[in-house]
Image (cartoon, rainbow, N blue to C red):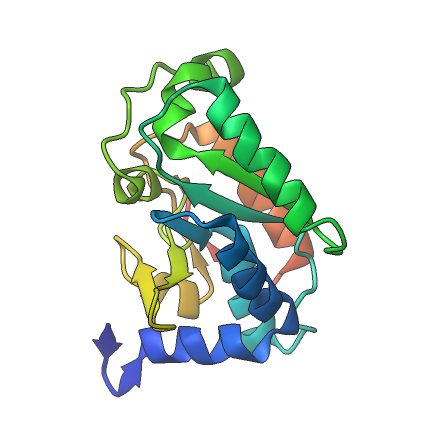
Length: 193
């Protein structure tokens, strides 16, 4: 997406390629052999914020989220992918969290108290993530090109804005998230609920 003279997708890829941490994540994730996956949310967003603010690129990143979509909903299948990811990322300095978005509806109510219809695609899952800036997934394709899914665009991300995506998040969860982020990145602007 280009706004004015800024191509935000190109700028996003430039920043990702500046981050040794993210470069390694994208390289290692290829070993998981997932056809429908994205690396998303916090680790991408926080890397961009860090670059724009002038922090070290990996400052404040607590985990790496890798999401994929597999219609085999058995726990055994997802557990196999989780075990493989632990092998692939065994020496990685940050926790890697991998989840099959096709299975989220099976555990979401127990964890968050909200009934959730099954997602029909990985993109539908990303579309429901908590904020407009963090509803973002990036992956490398087979030809080493980039695929970006950002249903709300990238403008909020590059303007350091945190705005609720009210599709699924509650006001309480939103507040918890932005308060944590605001402590680490006081430069961000939080848009009230």
